[in-house]
Image 1 (spheres, rainbow over the protein chains, first blue to last red):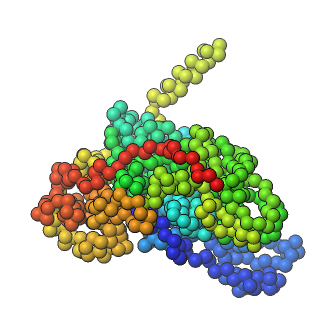
Image 2 (image 1 turned 90 degrees about the horizontal axis):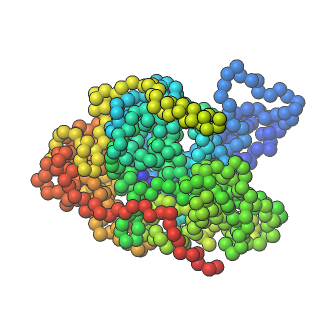
Image 3 (image 1 turned 90 degrees about the vertical axis):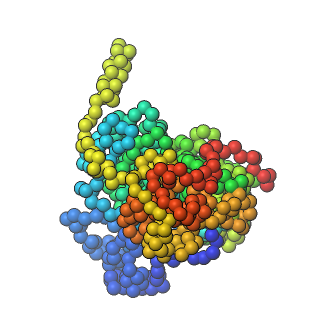
Length: 433
Length: 181
């Protein structure tokens, strides 16, 4: 099932946050026992283990080093992905990356957004094969060991679901940047260039498209233009220095840089070369863009330039006037970000933000602007320009072209300027401005 | 000297491009036979057939729990109705996107049911059963007669109501200038 939830504005839109019982925290820290920790905090957050917390870490031994192990995050860090609450089943749903807590440009693998159409497939890599067939010289199959013998490359790339921000077309939808923009994440992906495998298979001259199919229960399937496949696609088995996570497609996913997230087929098992697109359910009835005249745009592959301020952002509260750093992310499916501008007055005046190195094509770019809050109301916005000169539009400009066309008409590819309102009490909320 | 070096580099990279690594193994026809992905013109559709009547029984047993007794949707998508609802400038009124109103190719229905349905038992239906379900859904959508039996040839020949409903991607967009603040 595709992102069929559509823009909706009634609660509860996201799953409730984990229970956090902080009221006893001070006394628990003083007591310094695991039991007291649990009393104060409940179970440790996902991805963390529970340890005693001594009153003075310099006057006690720490936790012994294991002979072997896999590192966990601090038990004090509670930020998690959250699932969109409007889908009818957790087997076809999506979870949002908590961008409000993000620093830098890399998304931790455990916080990379998820979109699955039949749950997370669990696959033994020793039994997994990639089949390459159709209009090729000779149909081939590759084990994971075979694939890892080919020359490999690593690239920092964002993946964004084309449904990112779908709740925001008509009016402010979700309260936080996790909900409004959390379907984009950046990882370092490692694998074999798809072009290598296609040259190996010997693609026929009249071939134009490649079907990529997942081994999950949805057998998720999309057609990829051959020129894109030869240009920069990756058969990725690595993510952020280790094997791809199960929910990201372990042991093998297709990475299609800058294109709609759903084309980055997870649990990749098959590539079929053909002279025409396969017109799969996802590329006809789902990930297409219905216009007010009843026609729909098809094969809207590129994720256009987009930016968002991640801090301060919706749900936060500025603690006192004075210095605050405005920080956010910008990215474009057509190349590198050239410029980001920030407005604190709802788009009347714009100031250039500093771009943090590295500024890479098809990758999140971090921007920053120092800001002195005078305690008055402010509307914070960012807009970016990519290397093609494309300027991130306002939501109104997008709606003028795409229309609103009912609550499930305009869904995908909302890359408009996001506005956060800072009230005089410091509370930050999602607004259309 | 520089030119010679360049030519040497070029020659070696061409040689590498022409050499095959040779990893992996040939895929047999038997291995590939598990994969069915029809094209919109019907190439790739398997043998078999199924009638509207057979599809009705299958639908009731395997599909109705999620898609509704009248294909009106539930936990699963609504499958029929909605013709004429796509052209719609009303932000409060939802277009009804179904197999009947929105899907441009009947081959997509076969492909999707075969590989991904029923939701909790994907890949469990025979080709005959999938043809039968296509026939039933398309009959309920008033696209084929109730007396139909569909196979590879007749399914590919079905013309869907929204066949011409799709346009190529015109982006990057040229926007009108933003409204003055």
